[in-house]
Length: 165
Image 1 (spheres, one colour):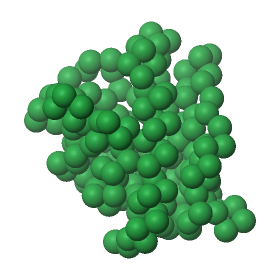
Image 2: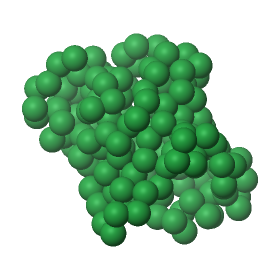
Image 3: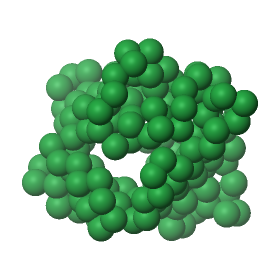
């Protein structure tokens, strides 16, 4: 993976990552659609994710937890918005309780992931939008930027497995 860029725009309340992969958009899309592949990169290596539910349809809910190095768990949720396979995914994401129910802690963020084929490679752009400057600052203080950088860097290994769903 080539991380092309990461950019924070405090005025627009966004964090954007751009990465290029040596795979088709269809293949990269599978790392979003298949929960077993998704959990291999949704979170930094030291905080691996486990998806308990992944209803990958518009309006579908996903529940997951990330397990820290000491065994502590942080739960999260997704509600999928638009899906334009294999080029665009929109969802809201936030913290959850152990049953997958939103806690409201730090509010929700909106994510848009786009995949674009360029010269035989796929460019993935992830834009996370925050509801306020305070939320953005709190998420950065928790290590979101570093965590996403580490998470995205794990996609190459999944693509190398040549696993097809």
